[in-house]
Image (cartoon, rainbow over all chains, first blue to last red; front, side):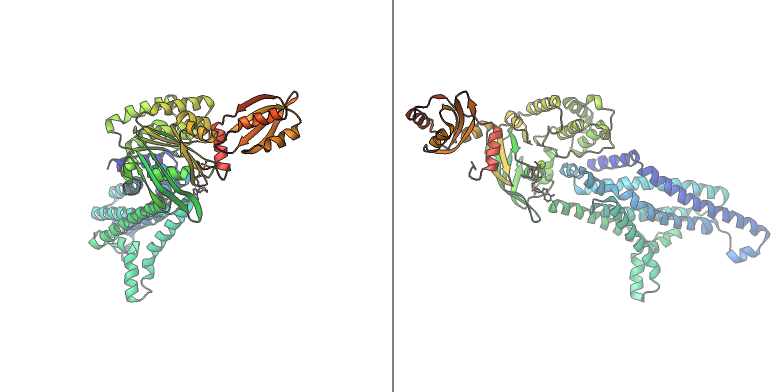
Length: 259
Length: 314
Ligand SMILES: Nc1ncnc2c1ncn2[C@@H]1O[C@H](COP(=O)(O)OP(=O)(O)OP(=O)(O)O)[C@@H](O)[C@H]1O
Ligand SMILES: [Mg+2]
Protein backbone atom coordinates (compact mmCIF):
# COMPACT_ATOMS: atom_id res chain seq x y z
CA UNK A 1 0.00 0.00 0.00
CA UNK A 2 2.78 2.32 1.01
CA UNK A 3 4.87 1.47 -2.05
CA UNK A 4 1.81 1.95 -4.21
CA UNK A 5 1.36 5.41 -2.79
CA UNK A 6 5.00 6.40 -3.35
CA UNK A 7 5.01 5.18 -6.92
CA UNK A 8 1.68 6.84 -7.64
CA UNK A 9 2.90 10.16 -6.24
CA UNK A 10 6.17 9.96 -8.15
CA UNK A 11 4.44 9.09 -11.42
CA UNK A 12 2.01 11.96 -11.09
CA UNK A 13 4.81 14.39 -10.31
CA UNK A 14 6.93 13.26 -13.21
CA UNK A 15 4.02 13.67 -15.61
CA UNK A 16 3.94 17.29 -14.57
CA UNK A 17 7.71 17.71 -14.46
CA UNK A 18 7.86 16.69 -18.09
CA UNK A 19 5.72 18.29 -20.79
CA UNK A 20 3.70 15.07 -21.19
CA UNK A 21 0.82 16.04 -18.91
CA UNK A 22 0.50 19.52 -20.37
CA UNK A 23 0.63 18.35 -23.97
CA UNK A 24 -1.88 15.58 -23.38
CA UNK A 25 -4.27 17.80 -21.42
CA UNK A 26 -4.01 20.62 -23.93
CA UNK A 27 -4.60 18.44 -26.96
CA UNK A 28 -7.53 16.79 -25.26
CA UNK A 29 -9.15 20.07 -24.29
CA UNK A 30 -8.52 21.64 -27.67
CA UNK A 31 -10.00 18.76 -29.66
CA UNK A 32 -13.01 18.14 -27.46
CA UNK A 33 -13.56 21.84 -26.87
CA UNK A 34 -13.56 22.57 -30.58
CA UNK A 35 -16.05 19.82 -31.20
CA UNK A 36 -18.24 20.95 -28.35
CA UNK A 37 -18.25 24.52 -29.61
CA UNK A 38 -19.36 23.41 -33.08
CA UNK A 39 -22.06 21.11 -31.94
CA UNK A 40 -23.39 23.45 -29.28
CA UNK A 41 -23.43 26.40 -31.69
CA UNK A 42 -25.26 24.47 -34.35
CA UNK A 43 -27.72 23.23 -31.75
CA UNK A 44 -28.55 26.74 -30.61
CA UNK A 45 -28.88 28.00 -34.17
CA UNK A 46 -31.21 25.16 -35.05
CA UNK A 47 -33.37 25.50 -32.00
CA UNK A 48 -33.56 29.26 -32.57
CA UNK A 49 -34.68 28.68 -36.15
CA UNK A 50 -37.15 26.05 -35.00
CA UNK A 51 -39.09 28.70 -33.10
CA UNK A 52 -39.97 30.37 -36.37
CA UNK A 53 -39.97 27.30 -38.56
CA UNK A 54 -41.87 24.36 -37.04
CA UNK A 55 -40.99 22.20 -40.05
CA UNK A 56 -37.54 21.75 -38.54
CA UNK A 57 -39.04 20.11 -35.51
CA UNK A 58 -40.66 17.55 -37.73
CA UNK A 59 -37.35 16.96 -39.42
CA UNK A 60 -35.17 16.58 -36.32
CA UNK A 61 -37.71 15.53 -33.76
CA UNK A 62 -37.94 17.38 -30.47
CA UNK A 63 -34.90 19.48 -29.67
CA UNK A 64 -33.41 17.65 -26.82
CA UNK A 65 -30.06 18.98 -25.69
CA UNK A 66 -29.05 15.61 -24.23
CA UNK A 67 -29.77 13.88 -27.45
CA UNK A 68 -28.26 16.53 -29.66
CA UNK A 69 -25.21 17.73 -27.69
CA UNK A 70 -24.31 15.58 -24.72
CA UNK A 71 -24.36 12.17 -26.34
CA UNK A 72 -22.32 13.09 -29.43
CA UNK A 73 -19.92 14.95 -27.16
CA UNK A 74 -19.24 11.82 -25.11
CA UNK A 75 -18.81 9.93 -28.36
CA UNK A 76 -16.11 12.28 -29.52
CA UNK A 77 -14.40 12.27 -26.11
CA UNK A 78 -14.02 8.51 -26.37
CA UNK A 79 -12.47 8.85 -29.83
CA UNK A 80 -10.02 11.49 -28.62
CA UNK A 81 -9.14 9.20 -25.72
CA UNK A 82 -8.26 6.57 -28.27
CA UNK A 83 -5.59 8.86 -29.68
CA UNK A 84 -4.39 10.42 -26.44
CA UNK A 85 -4.17 7.49 -24.03
CA UNK A 86 -1.29 5.73 -25.79
CA UNK A 87 0.75 8.93 -25.41
CA UNK A 88 0.03 8.89 -21.70
CA UNK A 89 0.85 5.25 -21.10
CA UNK A 90 3.73 4.69 -23.50
CA UNK A 91 6.42 5.84 -21.12
CA UNK A 92 5.35 3.94 -18.01
CA UNK A 93 7.71 0.95 -18.25
CA UNK A 94 9.41 1.48 -21.61
CA UNK A 95 11.19 4.57 -20.35
CA UNK A 96 12.37 2.87 -17.17
CA UNK A 97 13.81 0.06 -19.23
CA UNK A 98 15.49 2.35 -21.70
CA UNK A 99 17.13 4.51 -19.06
CA UNK A 100 17.98 1.55 -16.85
CA UNK A 101 16.05 2.80 -13.81
CA UNK A 102 14.17 -0.48 -14.04
CA UNK A 103 17.27 -2.16 -12.60
CA UNK A 104 16.87 -0.19 -9.40
CA UNK A 105 13.08 -0.41 -9.32
CA UNK A 106 13.25 -4.20 -9.58
CA UNK A 107 15.83 -4.44 -6.81
CA UNK A 108 13.80 -2.29 -4.41
CA UNK A 109 11.53 -4.23 -2.08
CA UNK A 110 8.54 -3.48 -4.28
CA UNK A 111 6.09 -6.09 -5.55
CA UNK A 112 5.46 -6.10 -9.27
CA UNK A 113 1.77 -5.55 -8.56
CA UNK A 114 2.53 -2.44 -6.52
CA UNK A 115 4.65 -0.98 -9.29
CA UNK A 116 2.02 -1.69 -11.92
CA UNK A 117 -0.90 -0.41 -9.87
CA UNK A 118 1.07 2.69 -8.91
CA UNK A 119 1.71 3.50 -12.54
CA UNK A 120 -1.87 2.64 -13.45
CA UNK A 121 -3.16 5.01 -10.79
CA UNK A 122 -0.77 7.71 -11.99
CA UNK A 123 -2.26 7.53 -15.48
CA UNK A 124 -5.78 7.39 -14.05
CA UNK A 125 -5.03 10.59 -12.15
CA UNK A 126 -4.06 12.46 -15.31
CA UNK A 127 -7.07 10.96 -17.06
CA UNK A 128 -9.33 12.19 -14.26
CA UNK A 129 -7.96 15.70 -14.70
CA UNK A 130 -8.61 15.32 -18.42
CA UNK A 131 -12.25 14.44 -17.83
CA UNK A 132 -12.48 17.19 -15.25
CA UNK A 133 -11.46 19.69 -17.92
CA UNK A 134 -14.44 18.63 -20.02
CA UNK A 135 -16.88 19.24 -17.20
CA UNK A 136 -17.32 23.02 -17.72
CA UNK A 137 -18.93 22.11 -21.04
CA UNK A 138 -21.64 20.32 -19.11
CA UNK A 139 -22.18 23.37 -16.92
CA UNK A 140 -22.50 25.49 -20.04
CA UNK A 141 -25.18 23.16 -21.34
CA UNK A 142 -26.95 23.34 -17.99
CA UNK A 143 -26.84 27.13 -18.12
CA UNK A 144 -28.41 27.37 -21.55
CA UNK A 145 -30.51 24.26 -21.68
CA UNK A 146 -31.88 21.48 -19.59
CA UNK A 147 -29.72 18.35 -19.95
CA UNK A 148 -30.51 15.03 -18.30
CA UNK A 149 -27.98 14.78 -15.50
CA UNK A 150 -28.50 11.05 -15.19
CA UNK A 151 -27.16 10.61 -18.71
CA UNK A 152 -24.23 12.89 -17.97
CA UNK A 153 -23.43 10.84 -14.87
CA UNK A 154 -23.58 7.46 -16.60
CA UNK A 155 -21.69 8.93 -19.56
CA UNK A 156 -18.82 9.88 -17.27
CA UNK A 157 -18.92 6.53 -15.47
CA UNK A 158 -18.67 4.82 -18.84
CA UNK A 159 -15.77 7.02 -19.91
CA UNK A 160 -13.89 6.31 -16.70
CA UNK A 161 -14.32 2.57 -17.17
CA UNK A 162 -13.29 2.75 -20.79
CA UNK A 163 -10.32 4.93 -19.87
CA UNK A 164 -9.20 2.39 -17.27
CA UNK A 165 -9.32 -0.31 -19.94
CA UNK A 166 -7.32 1.85 -22.39
CA UNK A 167 -4.71 2.60 -19.74
CA UNK A 168 -4.23 -0.99 -18.64
CA UNK A 169 -3.73 -2.05 -22.25
CA UNK A 170 -1.27 0.81 -22.79
CA UNK A 171 0.71 -0.13 -19.69
CA UNK A 172 0.94 -3.70 -20.88
CA UNK A 173 2.26 -2.59 -24.27
CA UNK A 174 4.79 -0.42 -22.49
CA UNK A 175 5.90 -3.36 -20.38
CA UNK A 176 6.78 -5.55 -23.35
CA UNK A 177 9.13 -3.14 -25.11
CA UNK A 178 11.75 -0.58 -24.20
CA UNK A 179 10.81 1.64 -27.10
CA UNK A 180 8.16 4.23 -26.31
CA UNK A 181 7.15 4.73 -29.93
CA UNK A 182 6.55 1.03 -30.38
CA UNK A 183 4.54 0.97 -27.17
CA UNK A 184 2.39 3.86 -28.38
CA UNK A 185 1.83 2.43 -31.85
CA UNK A 186 0.97 -1.01 -30.51
CA UNK A 187 -1.53 0.43 -28.04
CA UNK A 188 -3.08 2.73 -30.61
CA UNK A 189 -3.47 -0.05 -33.15
CA UNK A 190 -5.02 -2.47 -30.67
CA UNK A 191 -7.36 0.14 -29.24
CA UNK A 192 -8.40 1.12 -32.74
CA UNK A 193 -9.16 -2.46 -33.69
CA UNK A 194 -11.11 -3.06 -30.49
CA UNK A 195 -13.04 0.12 -31.08
CA UNK A 196 -13.94 -0.58 -34.69
CA UNK A 197 -14.53 -4.28 -34.49
CA UNK A 198 -18.12 -3.65 -33.38
CA UNK A 199 -18.90 -1.93 -36.68
CA UNK A 200 -17.99 -5.02 -38.65
CA UNK A 201 -20.30 -7.10 -36.48
CA UNK A 202 -23.23 -6.47 -38.81
CA UNK A 203 -21.34 -7.90 -41.75
CA UNK A 204 -20.29 -11.09 -40.05
CA UNK A 205 -22.52 -14.06 -39.37
CA UNK A 206 -24.80 -14.13 -36.35
CA UNK A 207 -22.49 -15.99 -34.00
CA UNK A 208 -19.28 -14.22 -35.01
CA UNK A 209 -21.11 -10.94 -35.06
CA UNK A 210 -22.19 -11.38 -31.44
CA UNK A 211 -18.65 -12.17 -30.41
CA UNK A 212 -17.25 -9.19 -32.31
CA UNK A 213 -19.82 -6.97 -30.68
CA UNK A 214 -19.00 -8.29 -27.28
CA UNK A 215 -15.31 -7.60 -27.53
CA UNK A 216 -15.72 -4.12 -28.97
CA UNK A 217 -15.33 -1.01 -26.83
CA UNK A 218 -17.93 1.01 -28.62
CA UNK A 219 -20.66 -1.57 -28.23
CA UNK A 220 -20.24 -1.53 -24.46
CA UNK A 221 -20.25 2.21 -24.29
CA UNK A 222 -23.59 2.66 -26.04
CA UNK A 223 -25.79 1.99 -23.03
CA UNK A 224 -23.75 4.26 -20.78
CA UNK A 225 -24.38 7.02 -23.30
CA UNK A 226 -28.11 6.37 -23.07
CA UNK A 227 -28.14 6.67 -19.31
CA UNK A 228 -28.15 2.96 -18.54
CA UNK A 229 -25.58 1.18 -16.44
CA UNK A 230 -25.68 -2.44 -17.47
CA UNK A 231 -23.79 -4.95 -15.34
CA UNK A 232 -22.54 -6.79 -18.37
CA UNK A 233 -20.86 -3.63 -19.67
CA UNK A 234 -19.31 -2.90 -16.30
CA UNK A 235 -18.06 -6.46 -16.10
CA UNK A 236 -16.59 -6.21 -19.59
CA UNK A 237 -14.53 -3.12 -18.79
CA UNK A 238 -13.45 -4.44 -15.40
CA UNK A 239 -12.38 -7.79 -16.81
CA UNK A 240 -10.53 -6.10 -19.62
CA UNK A 241 -8.66 -3.84 -17.22
CA UNK A 242 -7.81 -6.63 -14.80
CA UNK A 243 -6.68 -8.90 -17.59
CA UNK A 244 -4.18 -6.41 -18.97
CA UNK A 245 -2.90 -5.45 -15.53
CA UNK A 246 -2.36 -9.13 -14.92
CA UNK A 247 -0.60 -9.57 -18.26
CA UNK A 248 1.68 -6.64 -17.41
CA UNK A 249 2.59 -8.40 -14.21
CA UNK A 250 3.48 -11.55 -16.10
CA UNK A 251 5.54 -9.51 -18.50
CA UNK A 252 7.58 -7.97 -15.67
CA UNK A 253 8.06 -11.39 -14.12
CA UNK A 254 9.21 -12.90 -17.37
CA UNK A 255 11.66 -10.05 -17.75
CA UNK A 256 13.16 -11.22 -14.51
CA UNK A 257 13.23 -14.76 -15.75
CA UNK A 258 14.90 -13.95 -19.00
CA UNK A 259 17.29 -11.49 -17.42
CA UNK B 1 25.82 -13.51 5.28
CA UNK B 2 26.26 -14.27 1.62
CA UNK B 3 26.43 -17.77 0.30
CA UNK B 4 26.92 -18.46 -3.39
CA UNK B 5 26.91 -22.00 -4.71
CA UNK B 6 27.58 -23.16 -8.24
CA UNK B 7 26.16 -19.94 -9.60
CA UNK B 8 25.88 -20.04 -13.38
CA UNK B 9 24.28 -17.63 -15.80
CA UNK B 10 23.94 -18.20 -19.51
CA UNK B 11 22.73 -15.39 -21.77
CA UNK B 12 21.16 -17.20 -24.67
CA UNK B 13 24.22 -18.48 -26.43
CA UNK B 14 26.66 -16.27 -24.58
CA UNK B 15 28.49 -17.07 -21.37
CA UNK B 16 27.72 -14.96 -18.35
CA UNK B 17 29.27 -16.67 -15.34
CA UNK B 18 30.14 -20.26 -14.68
CA UNK B 19 30.07 -22.14 -11.40
CA UNK B 20 30.91 -19.32 -9.01
CA UNK B 21 31.24 -20.33 -5.35
CA UNK B 22 32.00 -18.23 -2.32
CA UNK B 23 30.73 -17.29 1.10
CA UNK B 24 31.02 -14.11 3.10
CA UNK B 25 30.69 -13.43 6.80
CA UNK B 26 28.89 -10.47 8.29
CA UNK B 27 31.06 -7.37 8.23
CA UNK B 28 33.35 -8.51 5.45
CA UNK B 29 34.29 -6.34 2.51
CA UNK B 30 34.83 -8.30 -0.66
CA UNK B 31 36.35 -6.94 -3.83
CA UNK B 32 35.48 -8.25 -7.29
CA UNK B 33 38.33 -7.92 -9.73
CA UNK B 34 38.31 -8.92 -13.35
CA UNK B 35 38.79 -7.57 -16.83
CA UNK B 36 35.86 -6.19 -18.88
CA UNK B 37 33.22 -8.79 -19.52
CA UNK B 38 34.46 -11.06 -16.75
CA UNK B 39 31.07 -11.41 -15.10
CA UNK B 40 31.26 -9.06 -12.11
CA UNK B 41 28.09 -7.17 -12.97
CA UNK B 42 26.31 -10.40 -13.81
CA UNK B 43 27.11 -11.85 -10.38
CA UNK B 44 25.93 -8.69 -8.66
CA UNK B 45 22.71 -8.58 -10.64
CA UNK B 46 21.88 -12.07 -9.50
CA UNK B 47 22.69 -11.26 -5.88
CA UNK B 48 20.43 -8.19 -6.01
CA UNK B 49 17.54 -10.20 -7.49
CA UNK B 50 17.53 -8.17 -10.69
CA UNK B 51 17.74 -11.37 -12.66
CA UNK B 52 17.73 -15.03 -11.81
CA UNK B 53 20.64 -17.40 -12.27
CA UNK B 54 20.46 -20.15 -14.85
CA UNK B 55 21.52 -22.63 -12.20
CA UNK B 56 23.03 -22.67 -8.76
CA UNK B 57 21.86 -20.86 -5.66
CA UNK B 58 22.65 -17.65 -3.85
CA UNK B 59 21.62 -16.66 -0.36
CA UNK B 60 21.83 -13.17 1.03
CA UNK B 61 21.25 -12.60 4.74
CA UNK B 62 19.91 -16.13 4.93
CA UNK B 63 17.29 -15.69 2.22
CA UNK B 64 17.40 -17.25 -1.20
CA UNK B 65 17.58 -14.59 -3.91
CA UNK B 66 15.07 -16.41 -6.05
CA UNK B 67 12.67 -17.99 -3.57
CA UNK B 68 12.60 -15.13 -1.11
CA UNK B 69 13.56 -12.17 -3.20
CA UNK B 70 11.48 -9.61 -1.33
CA UNK B 71 13.27 -10.37 1.92
CA UNK B 72 16.62 -10.10 0.19
CA UNK B 73 15.69 -6.83 -1.45
CA UNK B 74 14.66 -5.35 1.90
CA UNK B 75 18.18 -5.87 3.21
CA UNK B 76 20.38 -4.68 0.39
CA UNK B 77 21.56 -1.42 -1.05
CA UNK B 78 22.63 -1.63 -4.67
CA UNK B 79 24.56 0.78 -6.81
CA UNK B 80 24.31 -0.41 -10.43
CA UNK B 81 27.20 0.15 -12.77
CA UNK B 82 25.30 2.63 -14.95
CA UNK B 83 23.84 4.57 -11.98
CA UNK B 84 20.35 4.83 -13.45
CA UNK B 85 18.44 7.74 -11.91
CA UNK B 86 15.32 9.76 -12.70
CA UNK B 87 16.78 12.86 -14.28
CA UNK B 88 13.57 14.85 -13.89
CA UNK B 89 13.59 14.68 -10.10
CA UNK B 90 15.34 16.85 -7.57
CA UNK B 91 17.89 15.15 -5.36
CA UNK B 92 15.95 15.19 -2.05
CA UNK B 93 12.70 14.21 -3.77
CA UNK B 94 14.41 11.25 -5.36
CA UNK B 95 15.97 10.11 -2.11
CA UNK B 96 12.62 10.46 -0.35
CA UNK B 97 11.03 8.33 -3.03
CA UNK B 98 13.63 5.61 -2.59
CA UNK B 99 13.35 5.86 1.19
CA UNK B 100 9.62 5.35 0.84
CA UNK B 101 10.04 2.27 -1.32
CA UNK B 102 12.73 0.85 0.94
CA UNK B 103 10.59 0.82 4.06
CA UNK B 104 12.14 3.71 5.93
CA UNK B 105 9.51 4.63 8.56
CA UNK B 106 7.43 7.68 7.56
CA UNK B 107 8.68 9.81 10.42
CA UNK B 108 12.31 9.07 9.72
CA UNK B 109 12.31 9.68 5.98
CA UNK B 110 13.17 13.34 6.23
CA UNK B 111 16.01 12.96 8.71
CA UNK B 112 17.36 9.94 6.89
CA UNK B 113 17.47 11.84 3.59
CA UNK B 114 19.27 14.75 5.24
CA UNK B 115 21.74 12.44 6.90
CA UNK B 116 22.57 10.53 3.73
CA UNK B 117 22.93 13.71 1.69
CA UNK B 118 25.48 14.87 4.20
CA UNK B 119 27.22 11.52 4.21
CA UNK B 120 27.79 11.46 0.46
CA UNK B 121 28.43 15.19 0.21
CA UNK B 122 25.29 16.29 -1.58
CA UNK B 123 23.93 18.83 0.88
CA UNK B 124 24.71 21.79 -1.38
CA UNK B 125 22.98 20.12 -4.34
CA UNK B 126 19.57 19.99 -2.70
CA UNK B 127 17.88 22.32 -5.19
CA UNK B 128 19.29 20.64 -8.30
CA UNK B 129 17.56 18.29 -10.65
CA UNK B 130 19.47 15.03 -11.07
CA UNK B 131 19.68 15.68 -14.80
CA UNK B 132 21.73 18.79 -14.07
CA UNK B 133 24.34 17.01 -11.99
CA UNK B 134 27.78 16.01 -13.18
CA UNK B 135 28.73 12.34 -13.44
CA UNK B 136 30.50 12.38 -10.09
CA UNK B 137 27.55 13.88 -8.27
CA UNK B 138 25.17 11.42 -9.91
CA UNK B 139 27.45 8.71 -8.59
CA UNK B 140 26.97 10.17 -5.14
CA UNK B 141 23.20 10.21 -5.54
CA UNK B 142 23.43 6.57 -6.58
CA UNK B 143 25.46 5.78 -3.51
CA UNK B 144 23.02 7.78 -1.41
CA UNK B 145 20.01 5.78 -2.58
CA UNK B 146 21.88 2.56 -1.81
CA UNK B 147 22.50 3.74 1.76
CA UNK B 148 19.11 5.27 2.42
CA UNK B 149 17.63 2.34 4.35
CA UNK B 150 20.87 1.63 6.19
CA UNK B 151 21.07 -1.85 4.64
CA UNK B 152 22.90 -4.83 6.05
CA UNK B 153 24.40 -5.66 2.69
CA UNK B 154 25.82 -3.20 0.21
CA UNK B 155 26.53 -4.18 -3.37
CA UNK B 156 28.43 -1.52 -5.26
CA UNK B 157 29.32 -1.94 -8.91
CA UNK B 158 32.37 0.22 -9.60
CA UNK B 159 31.50 2.84 -6.99
CA UNK B 160 34.39 5.21 -7.63
CA UNK B 161 34.35 5.25 -11.40
CA UNK B 162 34.08 8.72 -12.88
CA UNK B 163 34.98 10.54 -9.69
CA UNK B 164 37.78 13.06 -9.33
CA UNK B 165 40.73 12.08 -7.12
CA UNK B 166 39.48 14.11 -4.18
CA UNK B 167 36.04 12.50 -4.40
CA UNK B 168 37.58 9.06 -4.80
CA UNK B 169 39.37 9.50 -1.51
CA UNK B 170 36.19 10.73 0.14
CA UNK B 171 34.05 7.91 -1.20
CA UNK B 172 36.64 5.32 -0.24
CA UNK B 173 36.80 6.57 3.30
CA UNK B 174 33.01 6.67 3.30
CA UNK B 175 32.89 3.01 2.29
CA UNK B 176 35.54 2.18 4.83
CA UNK B 177 33.47 3.97 7.44
CA UNK B 178 30.35 2.05 6.45
CA UNK B 179 31.93 -1.28 7.15
CA UNK B 180 31.81 -2.76 10.59
CA UNK B 181 28.54 -4.59 10.81
CA UNK B 182 27.80 -4.19 7.17
CA UNK B 183 28.70 -6.71 4.51
CA UNK B 184 29.97 -5.04 1.37
CA UNK B 185 30.73 -6.28 -2.10
CA UNK B 186 32.35 -3.89 -4.52
CA UNK B 187 33.80 -4.29 -7.94
CA UNK B 188 36.59 -2.21 -9.29
CA UNK B 189 39.27 -1.98 -11.91
CA UNK B 190 41.42 0.08 -9.60
CA UNK B 191 43.54 -2.48 -7.82
CA UNK B 192 45.05 -0.40 -5.05
CA UNK B 193 41.51 0.54 -4.12
CA UNK B 194 40.58 -3.09 -3.72
CA UNK B 195 43.65 -3.95 -1.66
CA UNK B 196 43.03 -0.88 0.46
CA UNK B 197 39.33 -1.44 1.16
CA UNK B 198 38.73 -5.13 0.93
CA UNK B 199 39.42 -7.87 3.39
CA UNK B 200 39.22 -10.40 0.59
CA UNK B 201 39.37 -10.33 -3.16
CA UNK B 202 37.73 -12.46 -5.79
CA UNK B 203 39.37 -12.54 -9.17
CA UNK B 204 36.95 -13.42 -11.96
CA UNK B 205 37.93 -13.97 -15.53
CA UNK B 206 35.84 -15.18 -18.43
CA UNK B 207 33.01 -15.99 -16.09
CA UNK B 208 35.07 -18.21 -13.83
CA UNK B 209 36.31 -17.60 -10.34
CA UNK B 210 40.09 -17.65 -10.61
CA UNK B 211 41.14 -16.80 -7.10
CA UNK B 212 39.66 -15.83 -3.76
CA UNK B 213 41.78 -14.72 -0.86
CA UNK B 214 43.03 -11.76 1.12
CA UNK B 215 45.12 -9.35 -0.93
CA UNK B 216 48.18 -10.22 1.21
CA UNK B 217 47.76 -13.95 0.70
CA UNK B 218 47.29 -13.56 -3.01
CA UNK B 219 50.53 -11.67 -3.15
CA UNK B 220 52.29 -14.21 -0.93
CA UNK B 221 51.05 -17.19 -2.91
CA UNK B 222 52.21 -15.77 -6.15
CA UNK B 223 55.40 -14.62 -4.58
CA UNK B 224 56.19 -18.29 -4.30
CA UNK B 225 56.86 -18.26 -8.00
CA UNK B 226 59.84 -16.14 -7.14
CA UNK B 227 61.36 -13.72 -9.46
CA UNK B 228 64.65 -12.13 -8.59
CA UNK B 229 66.53 -9.22 -9.95
CA UNK B 230 70.22 -9.87 -10.43
CA UNK B 231 72.97 -7.45 -11.38
CA UNK B 232 75.89 -9.30 -12.84
CA UNK B 233 78.99 -8.22 -14.70
CA UNK B 234 79.96 -10.22 -17.78
CA UNK B 235 79.03 -10.55 -21.44
CA UNK B 236 75.28 -10.37 -21.68
CA UNK B 237 74.86 -13.29 -24.08
CA UNK B 238 76.78 -15.79 -22.03
CA UNK B 239 75.23 -14.54 -18.77
CA UNK B 240 71.78 -15.12 -20.16
CA UNK B 241 72.55 -18.58 -21.48
CA UNK B 242 74.26 -19.50 -18.20
CA UNK B 243 71.28 -18.29 -16.19
CA UNK B 244 68.92 -20.21 -18.40
CA UNK B 245 70.92 -23.31 -17.68
CA UNK B 246 70.20 -23.12 -13.97
CA UNK B 247 67.77 -25.67 -12.59
CA UNK B 248 64.22 -24.35 -12.09
CA UNK B 249 64.62 -21.20 -14.14
CA UNK B 250 61.59 -20.42 -16.25
CA UNK B 251 62.48 -17.18 -17.88
CA UNK B 252 65.39 -14.75 -18.07
CA UNK B 253 65.09 -11.23 -19.29
CA UNK B 254 67.70 -8.56 -19.60
CA UNK B 255 66.35 -5.40 -18.05
CA UNK B 256 69.13 -2.96 -18.80
CA UNK B 257 72.68 -2.22 -17.86
CA UNK B 258 74.32 -0.28 -15.05
CA UNK B 259 77.90 0.61 -15.92
CA UNK B 260 79.77 -2.55 -16.80
CA UNK B 261 77.17 -4.83 -15.27
CA UNK B 262 73.84 -5.91 -16.69
CA UNK B 263 70.53 -6.26 -14.91
CA UNK B 264 68.50 -9.43 -15.37
CA UNK B 265 65.11 -10.54 -14.18
CA UNK B 266 65.09 -14.25 -13.49
CA UNK B 267 61.84 -16.06 -12.93
CA UNK B 268 61.86 -19.45 -11.24
CA UNK B 269 59.09 -21.99 -11.45
CA UNK B 270 56.48 -21.55 -8.75
CA UNK B 271 57.44 -22.69 -5.31
CA UNK B 272 61.14 -22.87 -6.02
CA UNK B 273 63.70 -20.27 -5.12
CA UNK B 274 67.04 -20.86 -6.81
CA UNK B 275 68.83 -17.71 -5.74
CA UNK B 276 71.63 -19.74 -4.21
CA UNK B 277 72.17 -21.61 -7.51
CA UNK B 278 72.34 -18.32 -9.31
CA UNK B 279 74.99 -17.04 -6.94
CA UNK B 280 76.96 -20.22 -7.36
CA UNK B 281 76.95 -19.94 -11.16
CA UNK B 282 78.17 -16.36 -10.97
CA UNK B 283 81.03 -17.34 -8.70
CA UNK B 284 82.01 -20.33 -10.85
CA UNK B 285 82.22 -18.15 -13.95
CA UNK B 286 84.09 -15.47 -12.00
CA UNK B 287 81.45 -12.84 -12.71
CA UNK B 288 80.80 -10.22 -10.09
CA UNK B 289 77.37 -10.39 -8.49
CA UNK B 290 76.39 -6.88 -7.36
CA UNK B 291 72.80 -7.36 -6.48
CA UNK B 292 70.33 -10.17 -5.92
CA UNK B 293 66.87 -9.05 -4.79
CA UNK B 294 63.49 -10.75 -4.80
CA UNK B 295 60.87 -8.89 -6.80
CA UNK B 296 57.70 -8.09 -4.89
CA UNK B 297 54.51 -8.42 -6.86
CA UNK B 298 51.79 -5.84 -6.61
CA UNK B 299 48.16 -6.79 -6.87
CA UNK B 300 48.37 -5.44 -10.39
CA UNK B 301 50.99 -8.02 -11.30
CA UNK B 302 48.95 -10.76 -9.73
CA UNK B 303 45.89 -9.69 -11.58
CA UNK B 304 47.72 -9.71 -14.88
CA UNK B 305 49.31 -12.98 -13.94
CA UNK B 306 46.07 -14.70 -13.11
CA UNK B 307 44.08 -13.49 -16.06
CA UNK B 308 46.83 -14.11 -18.61
CA UNK B 309 48.47 -17.30 -17.38
CA UNK B 310 46.79 -20.54 -18.26
CA UNK B 311 48.34 -22.52 -15.43
CA UNK B 312 48.01 -20.05 -12.64
CA UNK B 313 44.71 -20.80 -10.98
CA UNK B 314 45.34 -20.65 -7.28
N1 LIG C 1 22.08 -8.63 -21.01
C1 LIG C 1 23.06 -9.39 -21.55
N2 LIG C 1 22.81 -10.15 -22.64
C2 LIG C 1 23.77 -10.93 -23.18
N3 LIG C 1 25.01 -11.04 -22.69
C3 LIG C 1 25.34 -10.31 -21.61
C4 LIG C 1 24.37 -9.44 -20.98
N4 LIG C 1 24.97 -8.85 -19.94
C5 LIG C 1 26.23 -9.30 -19.91
N5 LIG C 1 26.46 -10.18 -20.91
C6 LIG C 1 27.71 -10.91 -21.17
O1 LIG C 1 28.12 -11.54 -19.97
C7 LIG C 1 29.50 -11.41 -19.77
C8 LIG C 1 29.79 -10.81 -18.43
O2 LIG C 1 29.37 -9.47 -18.43
P1 LIG C 1 29.42 -8.52 -17.15
O3 LIG C 1 28.66 -7.30 -17.47
O4 LIG C 1 29.00 -9.29 -15.97
O5 LIG C 1 30.98 -8.19 -17.07
P2 LIG C 1 31.75 -7.25 -16.03
O6 LIG C 1 32.72 -8.11 -15.31
O7 LIG C 1 30.80 -6.47 -15.22
O8 LIG C 1 32.55 -6.31 -17.02
P3 LIG C 1 32.93 -4.75 -16.89
O9 LIG C 1 34.21 -4.68 -16.17
O10 LIG C 1 33.09 -4.32 -18.31
O11 LIG C 1 31.82 -4.06 -16.21
C9 LIG C 1 30.04 -10.60 -20.94
O12 LIG C 1 30.62 -11.49 -21.84
C10 LIG C 1 28.83 -9.96 -21.55
O13 LIG C 1 28.96 -9.87 -22.93
MG1 LIG D 1 30.41 -4.57 -14.99
